[in-house]
Image (cartoon, rainbow, N blue to C red; front, side, top):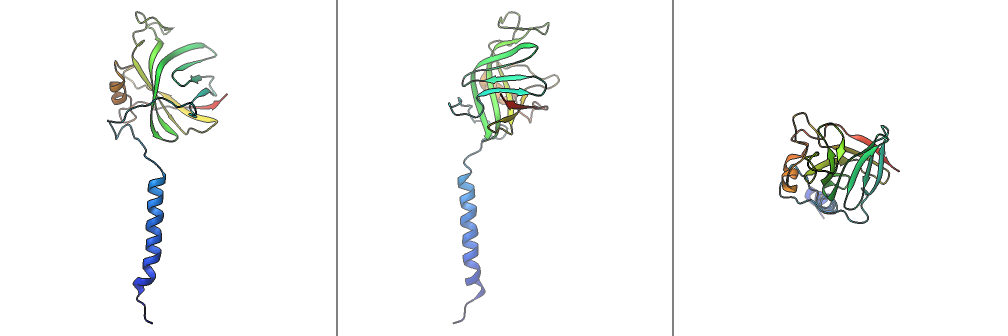
Amino acid sequence: MKKSIFSFVRLPVAVLLLCFAFVLTSCGPMVNPQNNPTATPVALNDNSKLIGTWESSFGEIYAIAKTSLSNGGSWGDCYAGDNLVVLAETETSGIIFIKYTRAMTADYKYSTDASVAPDVGKWYALAYKNLTDTSLSISGAYKADGKSSEDSLENAVKEFTVDNGYFGTYSECVKK
């Protein structure tokens, strides 16, 4: 019985195509905030790896709860916020958004009073990457001549992106 070469090629090609299809469907959707302007940040679930107290080698402390985040260190409390939502880019990276409840004043102190800390009540963002059960890289939204907050979550999602020049430096943190 004579078989063509195509008979021997069909099976390996079919197996490769099935494997490729499996990989594409098993990874799940990944949201890239820069490439998907209609993506909506969501609340954390109780089992999120983000929840916990994270400390950098410089003494920075990020306390992330299901609905809030606070930042500080050995030097005292810094900024804080509630209404915490996350726009995940992958399973290990994304952007956290908070509505300031405590923010910086003109004399570089922190206050919950919006009359002296004008960012209070407005939205801020922190990017994270390399998230594991015990470690995290985190970066507050900052760039020279950039914004320190936005009036709405929608505007914060549009403004605070890597493509817009924010999140240039990350702190390497471990879970306490």
